[in-house]
Length: 575
Image (cartoon, rainbow, N blue to C red):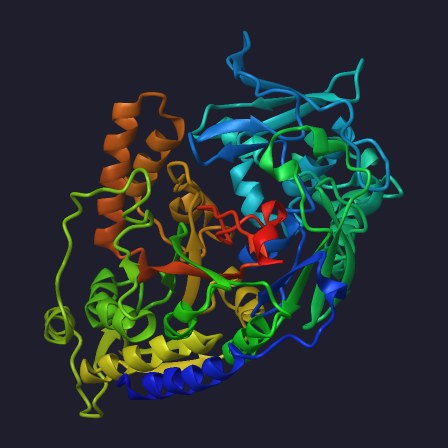
């Protein structure tokens, strides 16, 4: 692919932007008290537990609070729903206990108390094997019990069978769901947490009923209360989501960022097309745009230099693009095929073509700018010729002269033909470039267009795929690799079905290590093992590009989406 089509798009954008920058908004200040944010597409869900997703996080952050939050300034926990950060204690049986106490004045937006029953319900939701909370289930694997203090419905003790990396941070960062809304009939009261975790209960009618309840699609959005400073007041599919300030709000007297609110409303508008979105920004109908392409951001920024009406921000987010490779595939189970694919994946070209060179190349599951990255990784430098050599040396030859290499696998001649699912413009562009490179190496790559939610349901989650582009994200703390790379989680959070005994051993050491030097050593070794295995094809971490109208003074963050909308304050100088 050449750059000419992209430059033509950028040129067209320049014309549009030049025009709209001089336009005046004809919308009245009915929206003056609202912060208007553009998103490119609807979040599939704003339920933080049942359907956690990166787009949804941009909304549910202001609706559903965790027990505590990690302060990115010093990486320490700060209390949010709880009064203070407790210490982990070890009991006489060798189990680990963490006792939390909710703030006495913490209430849902409908005035109902936030209690330990809500926490216990949330844990039951996660532990229930029929619920769609797969990602959290692996995270809470060591949790064996959650005990409410019989003398106080504001106190609860978590019990863990073993100590794991970031144990306290993981459990306290969990958002809490409203039991009185999601389980109004008290169905979960008929099952203890122990029963829910017991395989013998899986055929119990109450267990099945609760599972069916948790799988109802309404829980994607039908959550009429919040614990955060805003509540959901409107959702119109593919159009608009409105969050309004909770008044009075119990948390406004506390100093933590998550409990603050400035704008009276946060209006989130779906505008898929960047040119249309920037036009709306220029005439004053949109205040914030993020996740812009490099071309759109650069062109708008250059054009806006003569205008003081915008805050232009470019920062980093701990997220990255990657390609899932299915290790259960008869072809991709061969590490040499995976290595050949890495040689054919020209990440530098992707960064040049799609990000104007403005991105960080990924070689590990940890971005180079995050804690824990192994700076001494031994990397392969290869291209198409090396890919062909790897395949040839490992028995892949074009035996029938049809330009596709083949090999006898399990007594059957198998051609090196793979499917590559695309779900959006970027994945399609990456697929086109990779397909061309694969063809030169004798690999047939079929591009299949399919919406990602369907790919997730019908392919990724059941291991029925070859290659799927995805977006990964990491915590601002040292990443816990257990969910994605341990054999235990094949069929759940380990979507690439990756398994290596050496990696498992290192992950087990990392998860339970209390010694920082030993932890660092194992973490670096694991990154090398995963790189050598080509567990996943890492691509790059794009910069986060944000444009804000000067009507607002923005607050930026390393966490997604790169800004804290609830902290945006009106800019008096711009009025």
